[in-house]
Length: 79
Image (cartoon, rainbow, N blue to C red; front, side, top):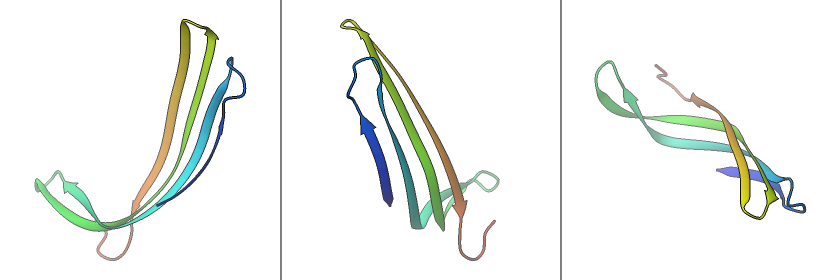
C-alpha cells in the first residue's frame, strides 16, 4: 500500500487533510453471495480521503469526512 497526503491545522476556523492511496493485494478475501462462499483473488484499490474540521468556539468542534474508493479485481479468472 502506498499513501500520500497533506494536513493543515494552521487556523482554528478551518483545517483538514487530503490523502490518496493505492494498494495491490494478493489473495484478497472475497464473498460470493450467490453460492454463500468465500474465495481469494488479487485486487487493486485506488482512493482519496478528505477531512475538514473547524473550531468556531472553544466548546464547539465541527468535522466532516469523506472517502472514495475504486476497487477492482485483477489477474485471471475474474468473475
